Length: 319
Image (tube, rainbow, N blue to C red; front, top):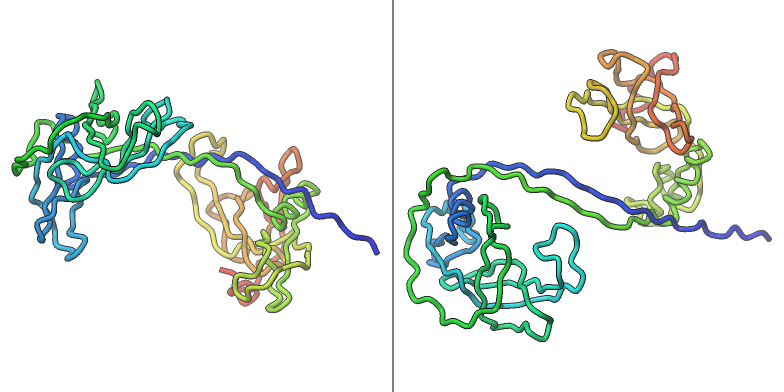
């Protein structure tokens, strides 16, 4: 008996990065503008608690909140975790502690970085104060970090009308997630198949659905999908969208069509770009085939085969 060795599991670095843009309501606008002016504002709930960072609706009653309160720039560490290897984009470049700090006058804690020489210098109950950034623009990064500071809690925390000159009304926050992705055995086999210009899925032994890309298990039946099945290469457009916004770093002119394509023999549709046809002539039921990338590692796009359109009943369950 010949035993097929398991495939080598593939790792690859992956970065997901995009700018997150949002407009601000009156509460968040006052909070961020306040940071620019070295003032920390919280919001009072119907029960009288002061929340920092402030929210626009009471988490207990869902009532709209507008009563702003100025809290202290000093506070107390409620819990913490040491970060020995800071990553790009984090508040400090040297080892630091992530801390939850309950600022004086607040009833909730704010997450930020604490500049400390080592974990032995950090403890729950440590008194700290804000170290303000030299240049402030109305963002959470206007708090450069916290630093240890022996002080007594401030006694008075007056209300604040939230009015500032030139208030911040919107923010653009860069979001980034970088990690090492491992596709697992099933998708490793799928990727190896693509390198041979073949599309290989796996069949559920219970419901017989063929998953492409394979997942290693059927999410419906909860059993392993061990039978490999080659599908396609041709398929049917089940639904699609016309893309009119050019993506950064993507050398494809807009408009173009991105579609769900049900490959022949597959039990669900996968994503693919449609080319070789005017974008306004793409339609549901269009029969397509893959055009492989120059290095032959994946389908660069799908093009019409010239066959008659598929009947709706043949793909209606794969929309």
